[in-house]
Length: 156
Image (cartoon, rainbow, N blue to C red; front, side, top):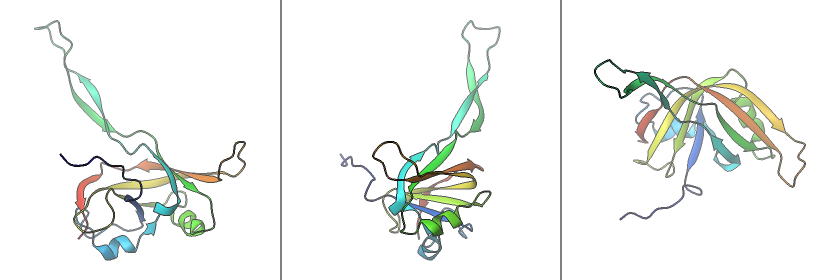
């Protein structure tokens, strides 16, 4: 049985301003050209697909059957620490209304590692400088997901 481990310490998050030539196999150069978010990521929310129920009940059975309806995604965001190490570049790359791709590389950026690439549009950046509790200042970047992710991506 394979060991169960967390991705923290291995996972990579990169914002790509332009699509890789092959979404299923981005090159190392295409990934490196993106904006590395990993060192500043505090939290990732959403980035899941949900399928609505489609009512398919009929008169032949008293069981309310359902099928697959439309696919949608919940609100999605990344919380970044607001520090001096690259935050200006990140905030510029993730300006409101920017369209791009978010690459989540679960086991690092090495070749043949499984990952997902989401088509996104930045909705809003919310700065949280004034913290009541003992917390570092953060920026929450909200994303609109523009379609299903390319899954099973393996860096070339």
